[in-house]
Image (cartoon, rainbow, N blue to C red; front, top):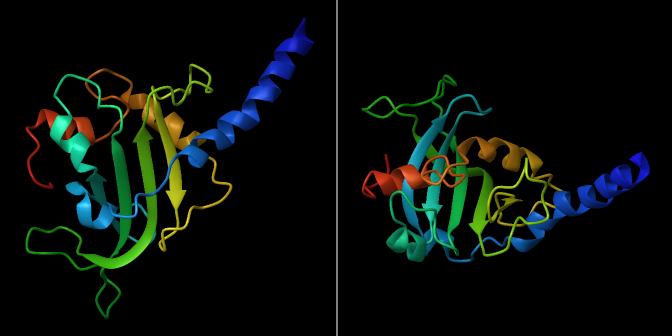
Length: 179
């Protein structure tokens, strides 16, 4: 009786590990057309980083507080390296926030489409969201395991969060400018 369970687990594991990144593409126009909805400092990252969060304008316009993100939502997270002075200390603006540079450390995409995510076990499934990782030049990082993305975002499993950390909060806050 154990053999079928083990075989099923082995058969599903490779599909879950590679299915998501293959589906998700980095939109060519994300830097010019998408809406910046949040900036988050990440001094815990080496080197210190500032994350810029983008959403496609269609999702920004149609997302509603208290409802899941609409199908077709594309969220892009760009990690930029924070500026440092000649002494190596990170620079801060007049509000005490890290000053981002144009140097990109990484780009990640989170996309929601009908039927996506169904190949994942229930404990990992993030609704209909999938994830992919990109190098600073926009090329897809081959062989990236998105299981940590799935695991982390399961903490935001609720109708009012829809597996997102900041997007649905931005919607609930009335879609103000970046924080």
